[in-house]
Amino acid sequence: MARIEVKQKDTETFEVTVTETTTTTHLVTLFQDYYQKLTGSKVSPETLIEKSFEFLLERESNTMILSRFDLPVIGDYFPEYEKNIVKRF
Image (cartoon, rainbow, N blue to C red; front, side):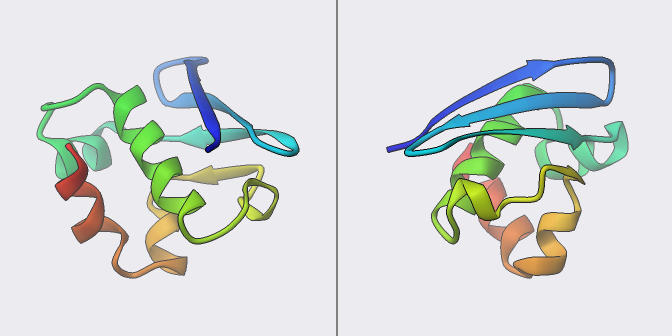
């Protein structure tokens, strides 16, 4: 099981470290409107990002995850992302 650590860098940027066989670091941008759309402020931005990485790790290894991306990009690769992620809170 991977360990996911999320640290807020500024208002919209988060650094995510995934520790598995190989440790990877990712910079994720989360805009306020997208955060509101998915969570309605029910969970913290860090929780949304952590759950999003859990979603990704169920589908690919941490070394396959982009090193820098905007959170909505997940839906471009996995169309079920938005419907799936709201069920995780």
